[in-house]
Picture: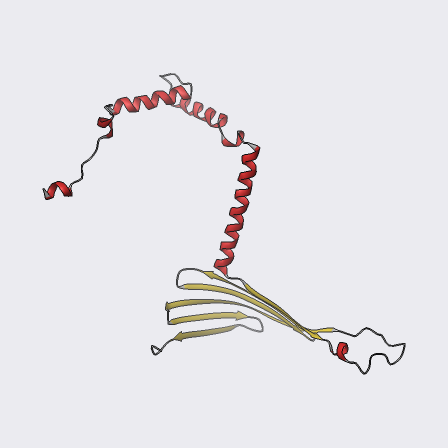
Length: 199
């Protein structure tokens, strides 16, 4: 009794349908030959030529409905937007722009109009500006590559750097990071983090 439960019964579908296997295969060949308008004694090259004719005749691009075409284009557009959103979430892009403005002339009330020769509009000048951008590229579940760059301009002097860093997570409480930065000279930084106690 235990043996019969362990062994599964193999079902012969041809026996259930009361059709011999050879008959079913021959029936499929016959239907294919009739569909492709082939003689029963067609050789391989005739079969390939008939298949190519059928492919050209019934290709999906030849039979497009304008309503279905619009629907397909809209679907493809939504899929592209979904893929772009997924990539943005994976790469986690961050960026910032900050501008330093000297607006002391705007709030200088005692020297508004001394004479008619001086200008009436206040002088507002941009004293500094900085732009930074970074993206993360997860390589595996534990490794992440980060590309970052920044530009700084202050009083006409510019400075900038580009950095590449890789971080490995060993566990939820341990990680290590190596950063290579190029700007005012090459710079290599190694950092690590670990919880020494439970709390």
